[in-house]
Length: 211
Image (cartoon, rainbow, N blue to C red):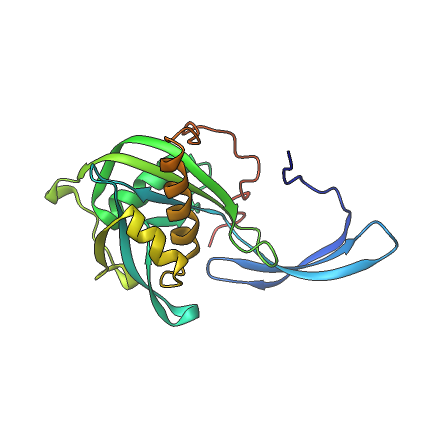
């Protein structure tokens, strides 16, 4: 069996080259261990979580959100940054589900973990599967703003969502990874699901300084 493993290469120097609103960019000089060194710029990311929500009819919830870097409206599961120091990732995922979709869920599992862009970012992402969902009472709902204020939502049959991903119609990485993982987990009789508190040693370190 193969598995990813952490490296122990020496970072000879590291400096922050840009201190951003949400993320910093740092420049590292890395010793590759064979007499060569390379300089790499890295987005120092807080990490994030997402939620693939399935209803009783095996429909997945997708939200339509504007993503400025790619100048596109993307259909994606509820998701958010791990930008609260010390917050449990499942608690963060449940908060995002309530804030973005006005939903709470009774049943949670870890669906899939991945690095969102390991060639240039430290972002580790954990995607949960949430079932047994119900609406947040109207008087307790979060007031959404900015890109989230007018998000459309759609309940899409999981098989249809899988086919849309494979046809190149859906591009958000949480959608791609989450939908394909959910379809594969269902095919395996959900035996691949992990407990909600499954270890996550790859988790990003989280916020490093006040913004």
